[in-house]
Image (tube, rainbow, N blue to C red; front, side, top):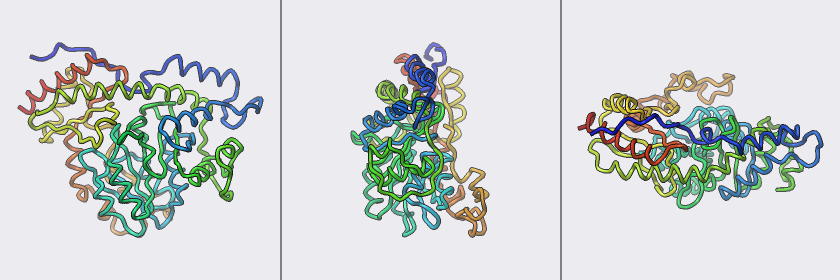
Length: 412
């Protein structure tokens, strides 16, 4: 028997729980008239919001250094440059990843090397071994939608080859792996506070590391080459001055992100528990498997992934869930890099900066759909069901009831 129709639950994570805490901190910035992180109307003391955000952020994930920046994309670009990656270098990343992962590599003049995903929708560690060359300087690990990659194997294989590990944690703040927060396994990590992320300030980002040199370089890269007293108080300057960009985080965004950060742990526990509750109901359904999670105890759980054995079942499955007011999508805003226009053209903003400019014909092997059969297969067969911060136990139980009912109708 089908469950009685329930209202569609409110989706979202940080954006769904914006409230009095965010309002209070943002109003504090406005009343002080100090929206710039490094100085304000009084110049003393230093405006507090971004400084406090960086302090609480590094304490929360358990790292040594944290630098607020203007966006998650900016964080990736700063991290790439901080590692000294540039023309002639290669960076491995999954073909199934967000736009900025690819573009941040191209914008420093390096070559993105695309890899297959595994059933976790993260990098298959065997791909790192297969694709690494003497030109490989870094591997960019995307912890996709609340599930950590297999960091034991990835870090081991990367570091034995002298390859930097950059963790892109934009989608997965709060996620653990083997009891440790993501963002603490590699050499440097990036986070995002964009609207759709776990914690949001509309736009914003964070760069974290345990490496003093990478931190100083990141600071200079984010602030026009400057290394101000606020940072020198944490780590004295050792690097010579060099040209930087402008990726500073404002006090207004920092205030909102600070309030949101304080809610992450509660959201993690809530979504994790509901995800586990639904997963327990879905075992043994023929023709349906669940996403592989290297460390289930650390997964955030804000999205449930179902893989259907038959790709033809995906559309009717989604439609029937939608008819029951169960939020569901076949995509999550991510598409294979090889299907994106900038990969099809192989162009950068200036022809000389494209790492593909001398490769003819283009697209070349390694940048075409037929080169990624596993990624094509997996991404054609999954459904993504959000589990939001405002979902209730009743919402989770209803979701499981509907999945079981629709499975019987579509796959039975």
